[in-house]
Image 1: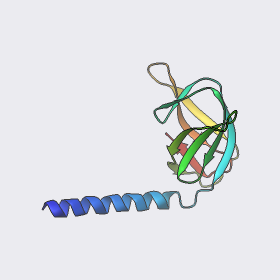
Image 2: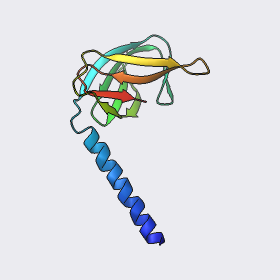
Image 3: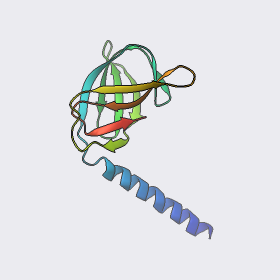
Image 4: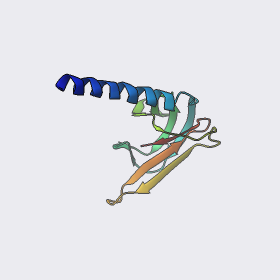
Length: 117
């Protein structure tokens, strides 16, 4: 019984990875610049105020500080397909119960994925 459970778990993981790959198989790689005016939480991490190059290579979303080209944050690329490329880069955020600004979604000009964190 234990071997069957382990095999079923392994099969589910393989299926989840295959679905994830299929979900973004049509995603367009995208890159743009954003200015963050105040520190924000994104994916559970703090991103300081500043100018960043934000890019998505269909697997990861990366924030690179423009002033020194340091990659300061890399997150998994996840979200739904928009059906078309975003015309503008947009950073959407809300205040959490502690008053901290949290990025909820990101659209990158040229990408067809609504990135969520």
